[in-house]
Image (cartoon, rainbow, N blue to C red; front, side, top):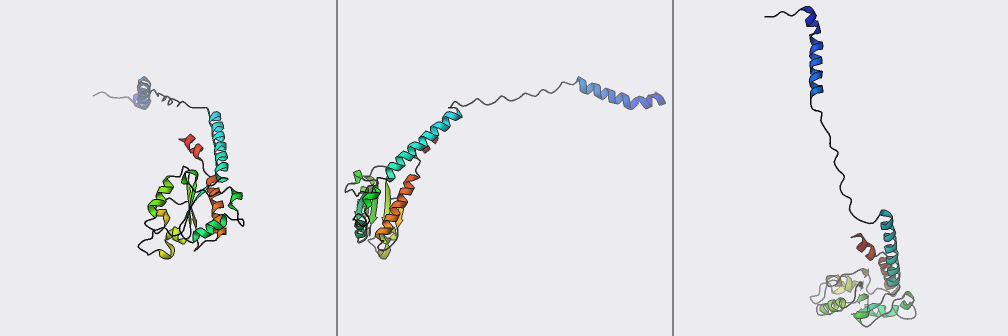
Length: 205
């Protein structure tokens, strides 16, 4: 058994520390590899993209201006609500000053005013006329009977709302609604048309 002197015992912690430092320095250093950035997707520069988006939005504004100023509704009068619809085309309210011109053909119309009670037998004709209208097209439901059946809601022969047959954009409440109510809803339809962004949505895809 070997004996360790006091001097060696005092130097022992320093020797162990030096040995550990030597072992750490001789170890293989860890190398860090920086990941390569993902490849850039081809596309126009940001400046060109913003300019194209601005031009597309102005094209949308031009189309919306033309559409809201030339609404040509298809008259679909079914009951006494149609009398108030005819009233709006007379000289007192004069729909022509808003660019609203009634058309007898669905091929030339972009809007349909359903005025009156829609029966089950009339529903297929309503859908057929709607399908013949070119895009974009809008529907105005005029009166309580066209909105939800109205007074004849529980009748076996009445459709409880024309929105079950065609999509409705604007509802005109009343039984019958006044000509001022229909005029106000047409103005609301013009605001809805003005918010369309067809080309901008196409560009964003």
